[in-house]
Length: 511
Image 1 (cartoon, rainbow, N blue to C red):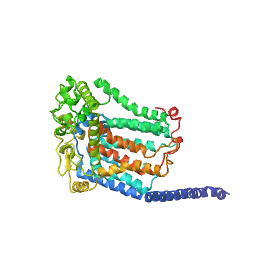
Image 2 (image 1 turned 135 degrees about the horizontal axis):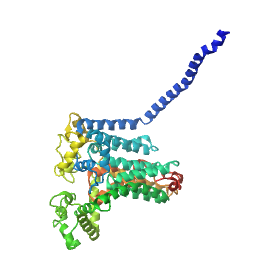
Image 3 (image 1 turned 180 degrees about the vertical axis):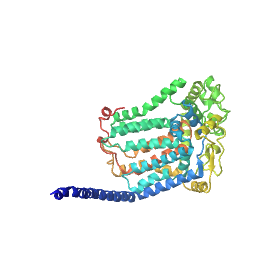
Image 4 (image 1 turned 90 degrees about the horizontal axis):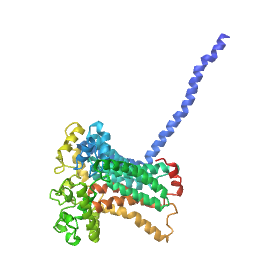
């Protein structure tokens, strides 16, 4: 009897082991299924993964060939703001905040690595947003931002453009993929990203209006309001800080000066007949003999620079704004021609030197270790750079990696003419389809062309600098992934029904 009573206890461990085995078997099968699904997904997206890997390899070469980073004249301003938190009169502090987040590492190599990751992430976002297109087309849309040598070089520079590009593309992708369940959260997130982009580069502010108008045209005025409020919350907060520092409204204090410099490409004081207080800003030379616009901001003999006080005081900036406004009002056709001429530089096939050899040279991978940027390099900026790195700053050129990148940069870029063709694809194909269908291709109520948001944002990013500042090669690159995304989305007639952005968003979203 005792032995019989003990049998169940003796058998219990075996039964428990058998039970674990039975429970473990489905887990093993589930793991195998997951492995097969992962392999199938990788095979399905293999072309994009190959392009992504090639982009990662190019960025690894940049990290190996140019250590730890490449410098630009603006770099010093951003770094000074890291250690002396104060709104800058020329550039908002968004990129400085990004540098501050990475400051505990005390390594500019970490900064460039983070920027390269943002570049790769931007390519992934473009591919994700184009997921309904053929995979080869989605891969082509992501390829320029992943493989363009000048994009890789821009990511290796200590400037704000890579961060700005990622924030803007992220906002557009969120707007493209709202979803019926969490559309409100996506709109708020998109607005916050646009606010952060505005505090990184001020050209982000018009993008809030661009996407807001798109929502309004789709009958979603409330959603446009949510987007605007979410975007303006960080901007207003920063503007409050700016006002407390300078007693001036805005987030920068140089808009008038930049617009003045822009108008000096055509302004004729004989035709404008400015009042006496504005005549000090006239340039007697004919427009064709004048230097590029940026020289009127930084050159020591500029009429604006020789005014009393620092260049961007409220008085000087206001004077420059009045001059620029008068020039545009009295010479509107000359202004329009100047804007189109400056914008036209974006779409040439070659890459001519502009605005001058010094600035142009910063966008090329150098063959030798470059010196600090000459005329802009302030001693304070150099000291703060050494404090950030906790060591010497500069760029070490390491061969053969640097040489491979220079050879690659000679052949691998998106020509401006190709960008123009990409921008023309969406409206041209849409017009052609509408003509073939005799107007039947009009979008459904509540819908809209899928390509319109990224296309409109890309065009805005190209036009605004040409209108208020001047053409610069680094201003073009953030527009490229959005233009490519718009082109690949042309095959979709609309974004879906009204349930993607429910009318209850303002009541459900907590700001």
